[in-house]
Length: 282
Image (cartoon, rainbow, N blue to C red; front, side, top):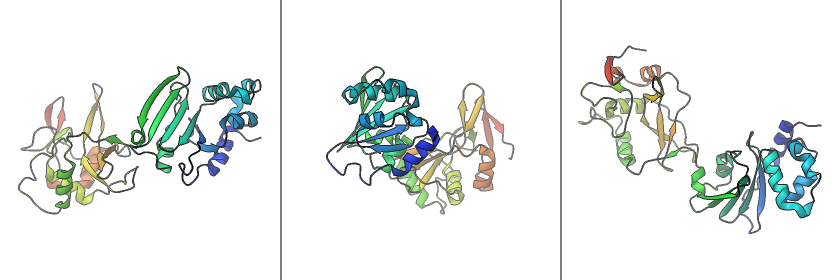
């Protein structure tokens, strides 16, 4: 008998049609909250009752054995509560999601795979635990964080295009930057264009998790975490979908700066409790 993991891996291979909006009739998908695996079912009530002996349904098996096709709402309620599954109902321009309390799957991979992360797609989330309903749009399930409305992306783009050129304002601060370091003649914590340009000439930017286009570095340094700790804060943005992404793979910012900044572009100081302390080379 297969276990829950083997079952989910098997069902994941027969998942999703090429277009989930191909027909006007609804189609349904279960998503496992823990693994993120998803699979399509023709009728979620019938499928749940027919697969009562599968590992993924084990936690609800006893209750399902007492129900029939006439108990559709009770079947779905039991499955999303006991089996850590979400049920998605897809119709043209609309996605319904049934979940239980905080047991909500990460829907971003599914939405990306099926082209659902768009503002014109309505997403209706129904919490089966409380019967509360909330409404979002598909672009709420894009990866990353939306850029602030006043973020000067076009300015960063123009500067990036001139990253190999020297300009009179190279030693002025790039707007909105926060680094935890300081350069002579630049406001504490902000990053001069000279340093960002230096990083652009060396840094290999990751691709956007939404549209796979190249991202643009807009910030690097250390950010305050709690009262005493700081963590790396390397931020890239996508110029197409206008989302920002923090690079979690970089732990040692000082080593990253040494590798990606020209010697002349390295910060002179590190900010400790708001005061400039001479930076020690990595």
